[in-house]
Image (cartoon, rainbow, N blue to C red):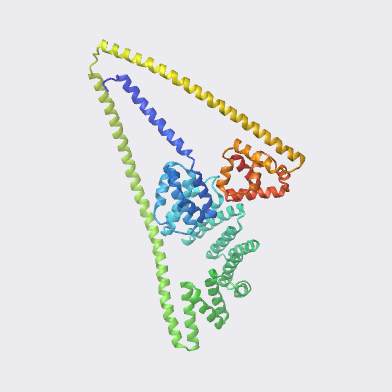
Amino acid sequence: MSRFSRKQIVVLSVAALAIAVIAIAAISVCCSHHTYPRELVVADSLCESNPDSAEALLHRMPDSVLEAKPDRMYYDLLRIKASNNLYEPQKDSTIFRIVDFFERYGDKERLCQAYYYQGKYYVQHNDAPQTLKCFQEALDMSDDNTPLAFKSKIYSQSGSIFHDQDLFDDALKMYSASFVLDSVQKDTINMVNGLRDIAQTYKYKNKTDNSEYYYKRAYALSEKQGDKHLSQSVLLALASLYKSRGDIEKAHKILSDELADVDDYIESPTYCLAADIFKKEGNVDSVYYYCQKLLSVGTVYAKEYASGELYEYYAMKGDLRKALSYMHMYRVLSDSVRNIDATQSVAKIHSLYNYNLREKENSILRESNRERLFIFIGVSLLLVLLIVFLLFVNERSKKKILEDGLLISHLEKLSKESCIEKESYKSRIRDLKQELDKVSLMRVERESEAASRKLYIYEQIKKCVYEKKNIHNEEWLTIENAIDFIYPDFKKSLLDMSNISQHEYEICILVKLGFTNTDIATIMNRTPGTISLSRSTLYKKLLKKEGKACDFNDFINSL
């Protein structure tokens, strides 16, 4: 430090500050434009449609792909996403670490997904307020690039949380927003489920006319879709609505006409409904029949109902032994039901209490962090000023007497070394320039050869189009060799994605060379419609998702 003047110290301090600012800006820019590995992007595209394959792909992911921390965080997020779509609960609190990272990193798309799966974590822990907070943050982070299906799912699940908390007006808003997005996508199955959720919410609000209207809309859509399971679930809900408002005849008609043969997953509610309808009609033998079935396939709630009805049945018949047996069963099941209801009620109260307590703790923590930040900034400024002051004192106290002879000798030595290094640099520059010229010449020659070959095979193929004749195997071999020269990685990229046939590869070549659908049909001796279908099929085969023929062209031209 004794060799620096006061002016040099000031300049160095300013330069250091400028370098720090530039470094921070550079890091921010780099982070905002980070490109994730292709393997992770492919796994992400499989998470919704084929989560099993996505999970297998993530399990085989090499460590070399995950060297960067953003890639590692993205990988952890995809593991949670795939598990969620396989209906597996989150095993730990990894999602909090992921949210914290992407909040600091600034990746809005990944942060939006992380907020959603953080909400799913709170769902598992019965924390409704925190769940809704995370879902809302995910919606706030979404933009025009966010998939509509993802936003629809958030709205729908937010509606379910509001519904469970008896906040039916809020639930209706969420369900309606989800239905609008499903309608835009023409997702009929989710549209049916959305209408059914809206109808059920209106039922809880005692607006049975509105509920009936939406149930009928849901049923009409399910019939149009041709989904028997979906139609039966909607009809079961509609029959339950009729029963609850006293339209027993309508409920019985649906039961006998549409719900006589139902799948296993709705047996319990269907048999409960049937037993209740027959009880209101005074048909005790049918009540007995369905209650016996419920004891085999029903939920704990259904079995409680069935045991109570069977107790009344045998009491009416005068069979006291069986009546007492079913009375005992009813009491045991009632205790189980009360325990479940009590647990759920406590969970609701506990989640609300925890939320209020957490908000209070967060407020205290934020205030404490703010105070610590101010103290840290103040101490840092004092340390900087102290360092500058010490440097200044050291500069003032140093000896300024230097021997001129030693200085001159040193300068001469530096001058000689500089001349030697200068000649060495000139020689290296000449060598590098010659190598650069050689590389440039080779590149120009290769580009010229590639252009020549491309023009040649294009003219040969165009000639075949004009003369409406097929291309022989020998000609195809020449064309493929030229393509391998012009686009060295083209064939390898395709084969890495899928094991395509020779015929499919020839279509890829013709598209890459810019030939139209009609030209390709002429060359391949096929109809234009067949070629369009082949391009769409190839797109799905290569990218594992649906796409149009024009999407296939864009993909091939991007390789």
